[in-house]
Image (cartoon, rainbow, N blue to C red; front, side):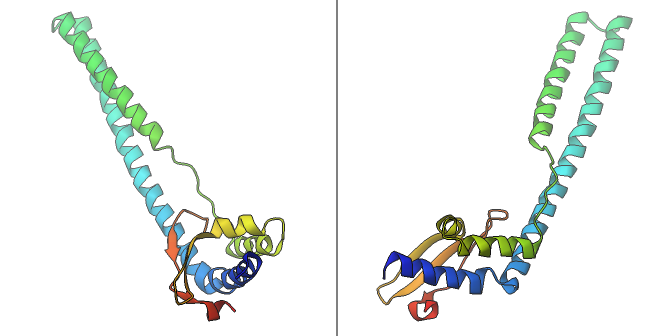
Length: 168
């Protein structure tokens, strides 16, 4: 097989299997559900951290009041204030890692059409194939195993073995 023939057959296979609504719709649904679950988890963690930050602020305020009132030795209170401030910095650092950004997905049909157009355009065809195909394994009996990635969320699916005759 020559490279051009493999590209032609692979392009046809991608269009008739991976880029079909029957494949893409459930795939998109899984990716969107996973993204929503991640957002919910991060939002919950962010709320927990916000509560801990408020509690640390309250403790610092009480320590400052205790320092002003002279209820405890100043050096002990200052050490406790520094500990609370250190804990606040750690919490703020954790909160910044949870930066929740809105995740948007393209319209399914637009996404499919744009990938199909990229496969049809000689200037973008190789890049489109490389973005979709992770690996191709050719067995001695000419069976191909194609591992592909649909570039919407990094989820990887593998095709079942595809015989050369299936690609013709």
